[in-house]
Image 1 (cartoon, rainbow over the protein chains, first blue to last red):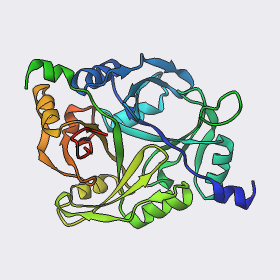
Image 2: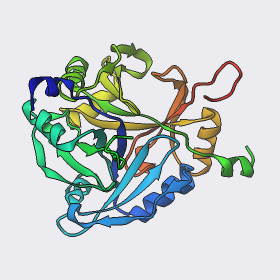
Image 3: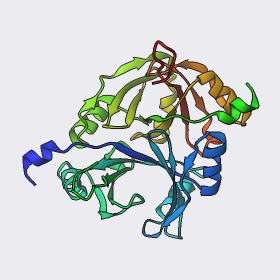
Image 4: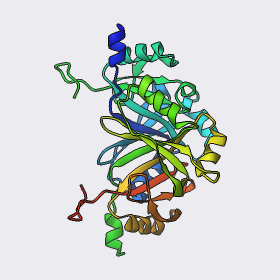
Length: 151
Length: 151
């Protein structure tokens, strides 16, 4: 990766905010019945990441509700500290996840692991919150159409 | 407010995610130089709410960086618990802040204080995180054009 390519790196749209919840069905009921959100997806399991998730879709913007799945779920620790739940991560889109990982590492960020498939079906990585103002940041490769162009 | 009006209440777009930071200039440099964000506003003070703030504008979505301002800033306590900073609140738009407050109270939510002017120049209220899955939720009246219609 050349210096010019690194300098050109731009962060894409905010894709979603991850909110950890102790009980996803209760959380869905809260966003539907109290907050007045109509479009909420059915919970699904993403076993490799140790989460059950559902998307709360606003007219623009999205909240990803995540409940721990399995005994080694990374969400369990978060809920020990925050038993009612809370904001867990922010997810931003990038054009190419491998380029983004390389740029982040060049800039001194700790990237947690290798790119893996996230809840939206594209590759994601997480950045160490200790390097990012205490915020767990997820980078997610944008969906690409068949012509290879981002949309 | 009639039962029909309450039933019709719908949450609007996610407006921004509030991120508390110990030093707003450092945070701006991080989002600009490391994360590759081009459009970041200059810090401004919102004295009544005890914050200095700046907006990190993504192609879609927005992060509001908030640094404590004054000795009674509500952000000070958050930073005591999270010295590096962290995700502080999620802000969603509503059509009418007084209607939204009334609907939230009818549905058993604790609304923190009366509507007041927020960083975007429209009225906002906050909901108690203890009633909202550990998340501090800000409701913000959408900007209206001169014809009184939301845009």
